Amino acid sequence: MISRPQRLLWPLLLGPSLGWAQFASTGTTTLSVTIDSAAAIRIDTPTTTLTTAGSTFAAAYTGTTNFTFKLRTSQASGTGSITLQVTADFSPANGPTVAGGDALTYTCTAASGTACSGPVSASTSSATAVASFGANAHSATAGDAGSTSWSLENLPRYVTGTYSATVTYTISAT
Amino acid sequence: MLGSSLNLVRRLSPRFRRWGSCVLAGLLSVGSGTTATSTRNQTLSAAISPNGKLSVPGSVALISAGGPTFPAFTGTLIVSYRARTTPGGSGAITLQITSDFSPAGGPSGSGGDLTYTCTGASLGTNCSGVQAAGTLSATPLVTIPASACTGGGGVCSVADPNTAQANFVLANYPAFQTGTYSAVLTFVISAT
Image 1: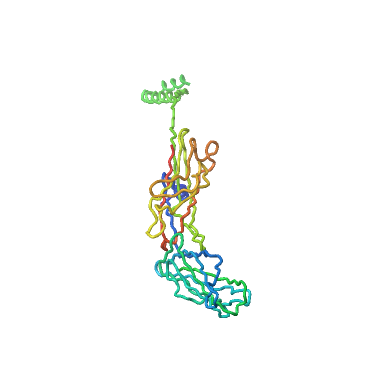
Image 2: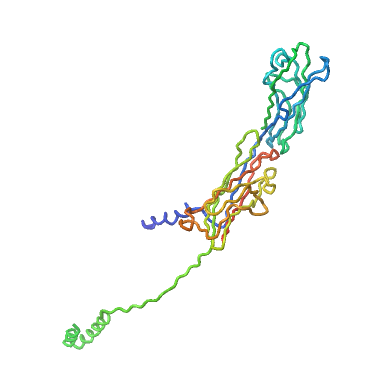
């Protein structure tokens, strides 16, 4: 049978070992990290100027937007995509208008993944494809290059002047 | 008192006289009233040698702030330590990747993906600048000077134990395969 004095002694014997860190000449720590899917894009051509090569209306206005992207999709079942959308139509008025049906099309290149099969008609109402990626896709550490080459039809009804639109590129990865 | 005791013994019968004499002799030898003392000096000496001990948490998780720019993974670790160095000695706390990140396909310590800075040493000096944690050799965390000691204040530190912080940065490369990876770091303290 354990006497009362012996019971009182137990916390004194066990307490220090329970609440005191173990000090030694060496110690080890396990570092852990979880790598998730991720994606980032940088537009390298802040302003893409569309120019026409000829003086006939048959010659469309053309130009190229360059971008660099980084991407990492999940090993087993990940996917990725780059899309674009005309988020602000040409302004001022009386020039080209994408929402009004004037043809603004593009073709795509991408150093990795699958570039769009163009020409693709740009839209103000929905995003359209630039590139797509499958599972376990990885760009280079510094990023991979891509581009969209634009073509805007040259219509006689355009009032002369300078017009601008905004195109938003979106990259995603799962 | 002695005379009266002896007279008492004389008046007893021979048998009781012998018994009484023995008892009287025993009482006289025990209760005589004098104490003999003797002293000796003993010299105690202790050689206090340098020493160092540390404690680290069992695990640290590196976390990314997230976002579209592939931000690095970061995490901090507190090392608790006690040290005592001689007037001509020194001490140090170092770390080394003793087991690189696994499984394969993710970060690599031997590839230089893990760096750290040192802050908050309450005894000694933090390591300087950005250190690359490696698998081949130990790298510094804290340098402890001569005549250093932990705890008690005065010539020693007030803090007991002392603490220092390692701030880890792990690169976040697109090339890493998704998944969870682990590496083992070993911390060593020395004191002379």
